[in-house]
Length: 274
Image (cartoon, rainbow, N blue to C red; front, side, top):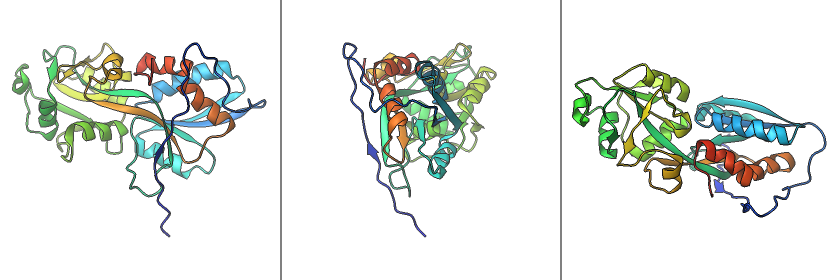
């Protein structure tokens, strides 16, 4: 039997200023409560940061966490009979059967293009990046680098980061079949760090000294350039769910959208507001 198609709705709880006291969104819970919060690999560092701080503030709260690519975590969300929520930088197509009804924005992500630190190339245009991932450019000489073959790295099919990269860069075009697949953001960073001729892309939350982020169209991927809407490869961070949150779930989402939660979001990404 075909299930009823759901309509996606974007919902924002009220954000408060630093001078306004934060009121609980619902009656505080008194007993132990388990929150089921999933995360794509791109947003897992954020969930870990939020979870650690929230557990300090609410010792009766425990978290049940699952992480994987977008398709896998979304399937868990859909299959769970109890309320559960997913942190992601990608939303499913609204035309997909049983797409979630609710999505709360919590921050802004940037998709960083990364290379080996020894690579002399420091920036690419969006057109150059598209040509690389189409397989039309195969040597770093083609974009002002050394005479070295390009190793194109991509996330696997089903990755939310890949879906956002292809939406922002590729349009309706397909990534070249010559691209090597990485099973996670962490794995992709490791692959780039170990291959001087490689190029890949990850959430800005995964940037570290083992790789070099390229400027795209002259703009480096930083929380500031994402917040100011200057960096071209941007994606909104959402918490998505199938039902309106109640009690502990609502408190948690309100806290993430509030002052303290946004400060934590801003440590790795760009917050909604400063």
